[in-house]
Length: 119
Image: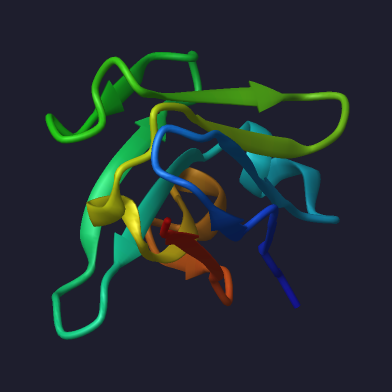
């Protein structure tokens, strides 16, 4: 069964940093699909944060541009989300998604990791 596993969430003060990881034992869904991060705050819909294509092209939501960086590590079968200058409004459960040819167009999701920004 194809699985994505997120890690790296936690509690951080405003202005702080965290790095999230999305990993899989199935190499191809990390390296040969587009991988994205989404987040869902309490009472809100899940929203797009960032993605990285199979060729390394990245895209970001306006709310995180200049603060978050998505990258892929092909050796470790992981996609990272470096989050800097965190704000209270970044508090959410962060989910990893893989979608593309490897999964026949279907989206595979991880279980999510909680990020809480609080003073």
